[in-house]
Length: 355
Image 1: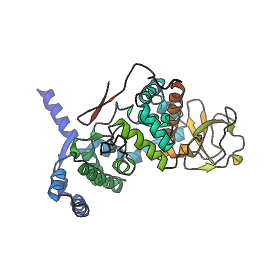
Image 2: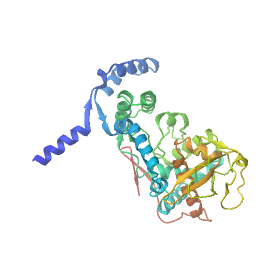
Image 3: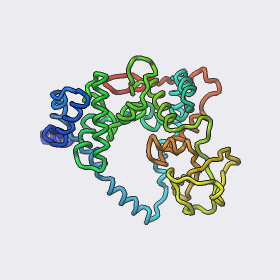
Image 4: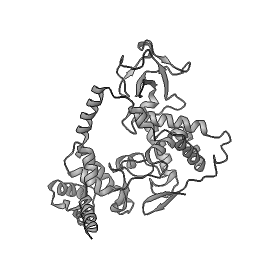
């Protein structure tokens, strides 16, 4: 009996109900969107009157300063191997094989999207693979409650989450969906590609012509990711990244990261590791900290475009390396599935399952 009571108390702490209509900021928010977008105020009041306060997402955003402090300590102690830890479970042969199966299952969609937007199938598949493992991990946080918590509880990105909450409410209202029925990431990202609500609206495409943009539908997601990269400047038939050589085992001669670009003529002693690299624009220097040495790469413009999807050099490199693995495993005869395994998206209470 004591165990049951303890579990009940623990569950209550995790799912603490809160009436956000008592919050002045929330009331101002309700007034603004009800007037601007002609939404029923009583409906909005009801939505915000019973919200599951999301402690975990809020703690993750409140803890960003602590994370930065830890990162400084790591740098001082010269701990290495952050790339090894980051990529260990993301850039794998298994995930690449699943990516091949996903491409072959949705072959015609990928062909149409690549033709329309110029983005290779392996990069779109890699994004879906890194984001949700092709639909296996869509997130289990209630999106409305998560965005409400992050919008009105103090953290450094309140304004951003208020905007995302507004877009999410408008999106669900337009498609006649219960906003409390949708689950996603701890930041409120949705679907196979983990689009934030604003990206959903700005870049989402109804590719299967069923009169709605469905981020749980593979066709819509593949096209939407292609559209996203295209609109952020993806250059068709251009390079993404290549590994380079340099003197020594640790690199600190130049600043690294996707935000800084260089003319290759100014990078003395650095050159492509595997022969000529047919790219002549400015490059980024991307450093991957491994346990015994730093791996250094040139990042082209398309590498930078991938960082528009997620603001991280490590993320973009994981996409590139997974895409390369997928490309190598794609069969020469693209008319047949890579294996008998078939990945299909099955809707069930706004969740995806893999068959």
